[in-house]
Image (tube, rainbow, N blue to C red):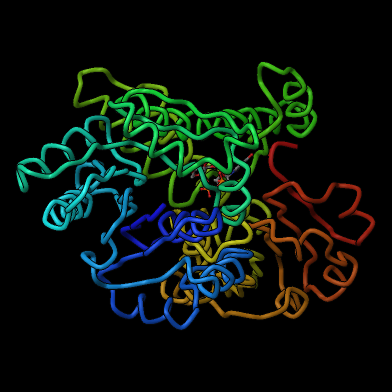
Length: 434
Ligand code: UDX
């Protein structure tokens, strides 16, 4: 099967590479000449473990290529995927669909034989019907169906999530479109991964409901964590105790500094907005958005307590600034609230992150970037563990504490314990919800 993938951002590139690995012929197209140039040279513009090798393998096999030319990409394609960005629109919180509809128009101009136009970008309910309308209006003779095929990839684990999904969701209106989609995902169905075939609107809703639910789960445990601190309970014990109930499940119950990233913040805001537009307020989701902001501010208060009420003149090392490990993504990372509060309060902040520097340099002015956690901790008054990169999971705490001016540790991902910190010689240790 021949597939055109429009947009070589996170979702588009991972999906394009993985579809080619299924054995399909995939042409990825993007408007950005530098990006296409890089991809043609075999350079992957994002950090995602394993993606570069998989891309190289399929380019070499002749199944994967990159172009600026949509017409060329669509030549003979039975499926055209729209995987362009849908950022939060400034001012009103809506998803910005400019790129989606622009892609639909261009598809309309280039469609020759029957093709399924599949939306992979996260789009509000009703967008697929609008894509269909735009294509029909632009080219009355176009022979096509639309399909909604939302993506559930986690950054840092995207290839595995694509190759071993919990489910594939496909929203379609015709059997013909369903057949094309089944053919595309055949390698997965043969291995018994479930497919949810449904209508367009439900498929669109599934994506928002899934992300809002997960954001709610994290926010719930973060709120419980705050109460645990007050009453002397340990949120790790509580998470384990409730997570073993199969109805609750143990995933996404890690208390921390608040969720960030490219999906949860954007999709919760968009869902709240869709609710308002339909006079059906998404009150839980709206509360989750507000509580997540409060969680980040609570982390700043925690650090302020550890610094005896003032950041002024304190030396602080921050370990990890990306929104989670195994990514270089800084979008809505808790560090963007926490680090400026430290710098603004007059602290001298050094930052260590295995991948964050490239994006982080512009976003976190006034900090010093250091390669190594032990060097960064030297002479500091506080070490803040903010993102749980593997290399911060097994630190020699004794070595860190012994080189600090005032050995104090804020473990905002609950990696270590009171006991670990005490044995290592820390004077103070503060985690989340314990
Ligand atoms: C998420 C969804 O998991 C994915 O299905 C969707 O398609 C896109 O959004 P991603 O944003 O890559 O993926 O990261 P994820 O691993 O889900 O983490 C999101 C945020 O929640 C991170 O900031 C993470 O630190 C935080 N988190 C996650 C917690 O604080 N606690 C948890 O228990 C889990």
